[in-house]
Length: 317
Image 1 (cartoon, helix red, strand yellow):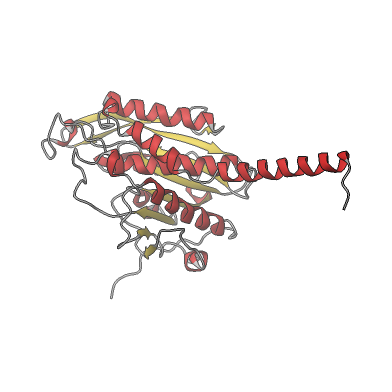
Image 2 (image 1 turned 90 degrees about the vertical axis):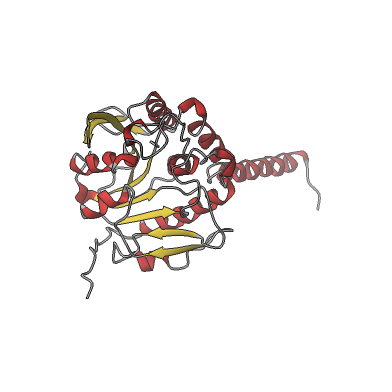
């Protein structure tokens, strides 16, 4: 077949467009490289463990707000990214903290909340000797890994070129390590009615994947539709198991007890939990990207439902 110069120009242009389209699509999937960069910053000694009411914690919240702005998320609280609050814990009164909230407005009636807590133990000053005071607890897994996941999902849903049938609210919670303070405050002072939440997905410690265990996904029993939504979901190089419980020791708990369906991603405990040794070198970023791929499948399947039906815990007989 003979091709003249015009035919060749069209063919070359089409090839370039296909190549660009392929690159475009790949850009917005969860990236192990970006995850590593995010965790490397948040878990650096510069932030000194991101302690609540410490400069490092404030820097972490500013970092998240800046990322939200870069991604084009609207400020989610009264025209600002920060939802400030104070709390009392034991002898510590009026401790300041803040949630960081970014909103993706798709003009939909219902909203999906995706959350992770940005705080960690810092230098342990608010824990009254429970942890070594003065030592930096960097918290690479707990929960810089979850914040990295939060930002990757924010990137995916702001830049995938599709207007979804649900709004998205991305929340980085403060004060989690001191008793789920940020999420407790949010459910008492929500930006929008809790009745308008489709579900809440929480990520806490998703950076230490153990292939023998897999990633646990809690909240499987919190909505009638979850079993159908999970059907045919597969991990790319990672496996998962489900847990019915909606309650637990992280921010999803606050939403669940307030009547909101939840999912909770967690790769399990380890010897570095709440120790100064929870550092970036032990992060498994490639596997975390795979875990986020599972989360995307579940979110997309859940968006096929009009509104999830909340299920509370059944009484044990």
